[in-house]
Image 1 (tube, rainbow, N blue to C red):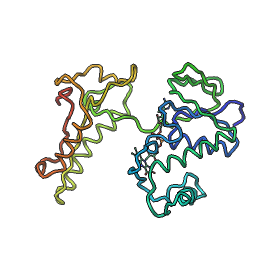
Image 2 (cartoon, protein in one colour):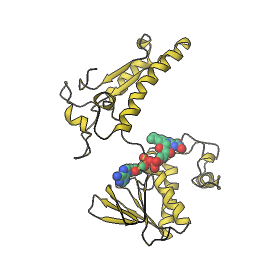
Image 3 (cartoon, protein in one colour):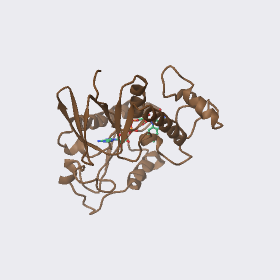
Image 4 (cartoon, rainbow, N blue to C red):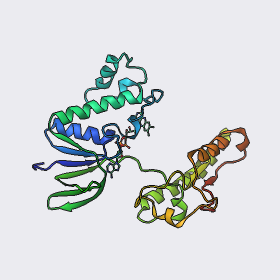
Length: 255
Ligand SMILES: Cc1cc2nc3c(=O)[nH]c(=O)nc-3n(C[C@H](O)[C@H](O)[C@H](O)COP(=O)(O)OP(=O)(O)OC[C@H]3O[C@@H](n4cnc5c(N)ncnc54)[C@H](O)[C@@H]3O)c2cc1C
């Protein structure tokens, strides 16, 4: 790619960070955009809780293809054993160091802001940030991670979310199929469909179906409300419940 403009990378989690570092190693400039306060760590590795461990052994967590011991060696310097499971915050520090090195090379820059739009320009992209800045980029990479779940939309529909609604509706069929397949092994399978959980999202970020559906209970649900249903389904009281989609939504949708 021959251009003075950088590659714009939206999302500073693991994927965006490693892309910026890989590009820097190849002498290609990038600007990494993330306004969540988790720059260089992302959702999984920004935890500060020491009890949160990686689910892969340290020896399998290198950020660099071709350097399989890269993380294990950094972990060993902190007293870790390569075959053990490091804390996720340790991996976060490791990733943060990789980003710092890329920035120090002069080939990566960070922008603590949220990208609100991206428009094609002649030979590139114009990315707009919520702080009013415009970035003229030679290329654009979206590394925005997984989006928040929205349980209702498989049933209510939602504008401009064909991919989301389709995937969620598929889970209903999968639940029924798995319940049938696993019944001989005395395994029950159910789907919990949450709706309107937690505080309202920022202005403009609330999905369209949230605007047309309110709860009958007059308040939004809490994560604990979903956890209580999952706990019930895992317990002996639910032995006769299988293949069901169970709505936990304060009456916002009634089937
Ligand atoms: C709790 C948890 C534990 C995990 N543990 C492991 C593990 O032990 N081992 C393992 O290999 N994998 C683990 N994973 C999987 C992990 O999610 C992936 O390995 C990887 O971290 C995903 O990185 P990502 O960059 O794709 O997404 P994320 O980490 O989600 O990063 C995406 C970033 O994009 C930002 N963003 C989104 N939209 C915009 C926008 N418009 N403008 C600017 N920024 C934006 C978000 O704020 C976020 O910071 C775990 C996941 C979770 C949730």
